Length: 311
Image (cartoon, rainbow, N blue to C red):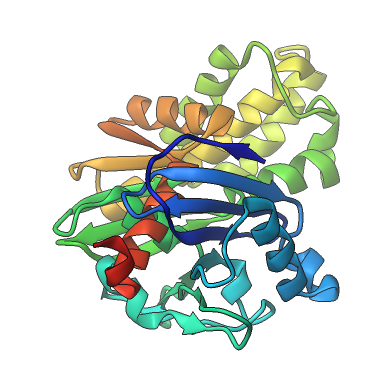
């Protein structure tokens, strides 16, 4: 646990509860982080260990008072989570997320924010956790696109502060499956990394942009090029990343266009890859840190729920 100096007293505890991770922050009324704690007790862990004990343990680590309210986003509100927080259906305003928060039947005031659902038979989609990040990085009347890279990347179109439509791309999961459980496992180094990923990544990106509907063919050519001595296995991970991310961006561009301002919610190496790919694809990118986005969204929602604590 780490701590930061602030003259303010704690107002609430913000929690981002994922599938395999837990992060909590003790927050002051002015949005300053006073302390944090994190661990690997995500939803999958809590399915057997229980959610209440995990939260209680982390609240003790934070030194949070017993009467301090807690606001949670993420997979704790899933159907397999602690308490299901039903999806809000698009179109929906981000600054109305707090109205869908579900109170947990436990000691103290603990609430879980809802996810968002696109209840369309032609484009069904859901998100849980990303909606809070969106709230954290947008203004009440923001219009534009947001890209959130990850195992399941999200592209979201927002108009005047409301989520109108979104799309999920299984880009990260496809990379893992293809590099570990397909013929391409022989074309990618075991650690999935590549020190010289610039040239190979952009080559894969260019291939995907030139023929975005030919992914199945270009994937096999990645292996064939190595067998025939045109490419090296050391470049395989980077080229595969370029092919998959490039295909994602090409489809998103065709669906949403590139004329909107775009905010990229990312972190680390993956965030840098997407930034480079988006710029190469003609987007103007405004980067936002993923963890700060989650905290910011939780603070905004908490102010709506417990306004008196923030006065």
